[in-house]
Length: 186
Length: 198
Image (cartoon, rainbow over all chains, first blue to last red; front, side, top):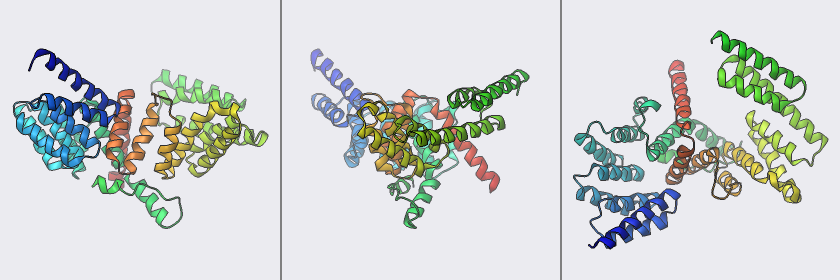
């Protein structure tokens, strides 16, 4: 691949990341696909495409791409960490933990992988895992903190939302519309 | 509490009570803020908050009685009701405020704030889809306050849209990193309470 083409794919990749951050998932997916078309071996484009797809609800393709990315990039813990995030977002917590733990085997000091591993443990039902995730010990990563906050809010709101649903069933209050929060929490 | 802090809190409470006596709820809120920063969650702050909330409620009610067409009074009253966790009434007041705004072009400056109050009240009543819609309408183009991201994230979470929730919470964390510590403290307190009760 010539130098100009390489620079161009780098530019598309950055645009994809920016679009994903801004919430433009369609734009992000199209940019990452463009990168992969031009450079199928790009180490991070595949896993970033998987992240954008899982956020857009395309879970199956995201999982397939994350598995491929992790298999192709055995020497890159960053790719395995992001693949773990794809599995976490897809609700496949066992696969997610496998990825995080493989990163930790290579580098036990990787606090982001350790944090995600605990978070996946918590999401899988180990309600004591949160104790190790104190604010001072939390990795300073926005996507991680957003997922941590999501778990905290689920813990804090579960009872109230359940009560609202029950009250709605009894006809004593307006019907809450969050029928699926509980399912997803489990 | 250190002696110096005790003296400060006593002074602020004295000024705050004087402001309430003079009918200046806004000033009292300012002194309350100072007290809460120094002794958060402690009896003097909690008691004074209660007094300020009661005064804000009474003032809002009185202003609406004096001028039922006042959008500002409706907003203040709805906020005071929200603080008192009287969500049904807060929702009604905010909706009444929105109707007044629709009928009076001059009051349009209050629309975004009123939509946010209505969104918050709708959320607390469990009307998550409606709350999201109200927050969307009340959004400033290209910018949303951290609290709006927080509520929208919660609405998505309650509606089962985890990806939407994560997107909003990511924006929240970028804007207000301190929210993480506050929510953790809340969870720790809740768990501790449950363990003590258990």
